[in-house]
Image (cartoon, rainbow, N blue to C red; front, side, top):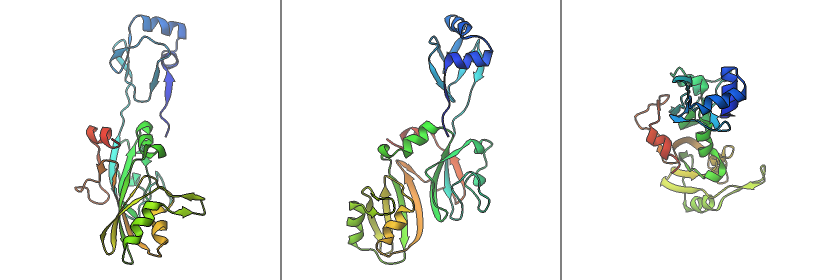
Length: 236
């Protein structure tokens, strides 16, 4: 979902149904404020979440929303689906249909899903050059050994996409469980990497994204709004 941006003069001209020449006059009279600061420049860029007032009256006030969800298996990371329940269906917020998903999980993968209407924030977390780590707990059918650690750290070549995965960190938790940390999210990447060892993944659960851990107080299907500190510090 793109974050709509516009020049201030175009926005005011359309809102007030006046010419841009008259917009200049309004600005010269210090009648317009953006986020509490008087506006002077006609070419100032505003966006969806800019708080704009004219003569003390609010003419744009949109809120940004940031949601953490504990996704169960069997639920699709989509805004609508004809066959399965979606992550949107699990939410109980009046603004839920304004949200988009930040990093999807497969149907049979559980754990942390983030949703927002702020595309600037979601881009911070998903662009490859940002290198925001995602951590998963993996339960496997067959026992693990040290060879897995080296193979994940080296990266694996996927012929179908003609690419080599970026180094991933694998930590063995027990004979059949591991923690995997990735900075990318290729199609079924974790399952395919373990597939090189002919070791099927029995369960996959995302525990964290960046500095944000899934809230242990959230049961499967439950969600909550993020705190301002969580929003600001997730990729720090």
